[in-house]
Length: 182
Image 1 (cartoon, rainbow, N blue to C red):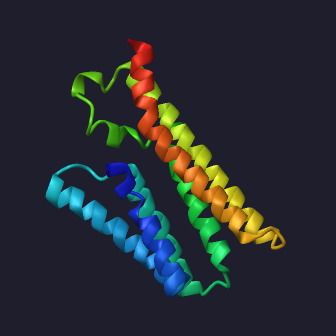
Image 2 (cartoon, rainbow, N blue to C red):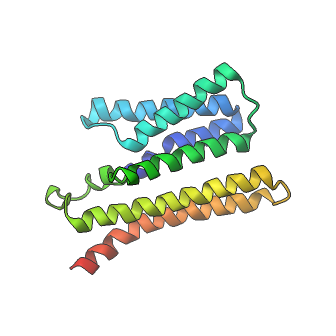
């Protein structure tokens, strides 16, 4: 549940972007990110997660830029920037050898497994699958931006399938990996 809740800023962005506009959507994403971080710091007494911190920087930075510069971004252009930012957060977590899923997995796995090669590899694999899903989102955004002749529903279907696949893989793979290591 934790990892799904961490995507709440992106859901808030998408809803407010559709209903009110891009700058308001970016601000909503930043506010939801800040609320998740505050919840962790105050209520649960744990350090903020990389995805939530990255989301705050992403949405906050884009919201400030949009408010100050008033860029002429299309809805798809804003989505592309947000999806690229999300992809960057996930790839950066892999590059620094701290897959973003580690913080969520450690909430469900006993401490004695946290530094085992199997646990670390499982998180590398799951984070990589999420990165691939976000590559699909970025590609779908690029198609919508540069190929307006392609029906928008194709991009929507690709996005839904990529996210659904990443969610299903995240729930399936740890059990498969633990059986393989046994």
